[in-house]
Structure formats: C-alpha cells, structure tokens
Image 1 (cartoon, one colour):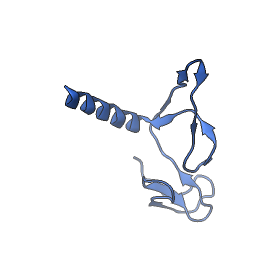
Image 2: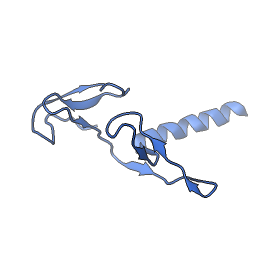
Image 3: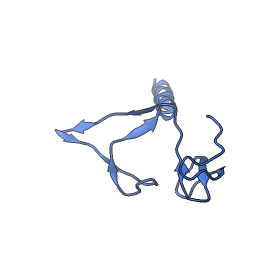
Image 4: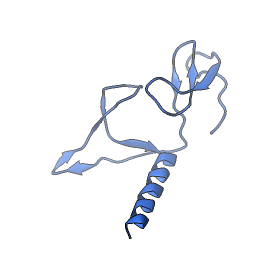
Length: 92
C-alpha cells in the first residue's frame, strides 16, 4: 500500500489508525474526518437468488445502513479464496 501524507479532500495531514466500527488501519483526516479507503482493485458481482438480486446492508461508514451489492478489494477476495481452499482441504 502506498504511503499517504495528505487528505485528498482538504489537504490536511492524515494519520493511520483504525476508525470506529472498522477493523483495519486506514488513513484518516483529523481536520475534515474523511476516511481514505485505498485498494488496488475492487471486484464485485450481482448475486441472484430465486430471480431476485441479493443486496447487503452496510455495517460501517461510509454510507452506514445503505443497501449495496457485495464488494471486496482484490486482496480480500484472494484471502477469502485461500480460506475456502483451506476449508476444502480439511474436509478431505
């Protein structure tokens, strides 16, 4: 991950810490409160079940409580894939 020194919203210095309601360290601007979510590649899909689109309700900011399609960074997707592979290996 690239090092970030300044907020892209207001230009103030940012600090790296875990925001409230999150579990990952992010760059946060103390001046304007912007949380900077940095990912290399974002992947997503539109899952369908019995003819309806499956949505998720966001549990963290930004847009806490809003409906969205499931999303993850490429790094998260690879981590999930490795876990799934490890679980399959244990079942054998």
